[in-house]
Image 1 (cartoon, rainbow, N blue to C red):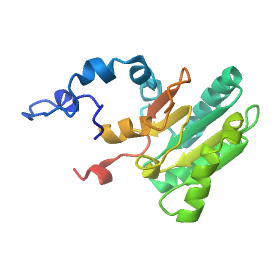
Image 2: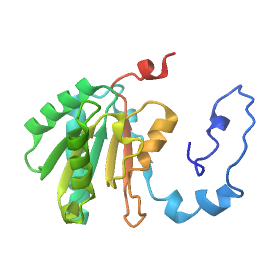
Image 3: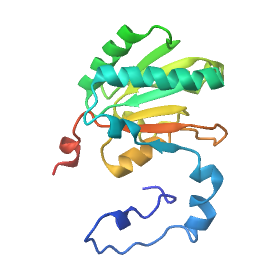
Length: 197
């Protein structure tokens, strides 16, 4: 885990865990710093609205939120992350059919089956400053959570492990210069095969 993450053991009941902070006064020095604290807003509205969201409804929500953000900022980089590769394929098919009033300039797919040269090409495309003015959608599995240096505006994520959800938030507003960057959590696929309960 990152040295700046909060002590998540406090939300687990009945655990007696010794916690050794890696940074002294992290609460004061980092966690309450506006650049860290307000960099990403977690949005649970999709969990409240849908018990289990369909790819069709999710496509509607992604298009709606991306359009709103794009109207204010004139561009948007949106990422949608799934647990299962099949969901990425289903979502891609659904979003292509629904594009109308709002369309992305580029839709990219990234998963564990994408070969490394293509993966690097996608990452470099997202990092290219010339593409900051475009509307881009990245549909992905959890391969973007670790070791991928990208800076997105909006994210939609199938909830899974708490630290996984937190890790993806690191791909939003990395330079802390943008406003209203949000991570929308949703329920689609069950994460049990990852957790192995």
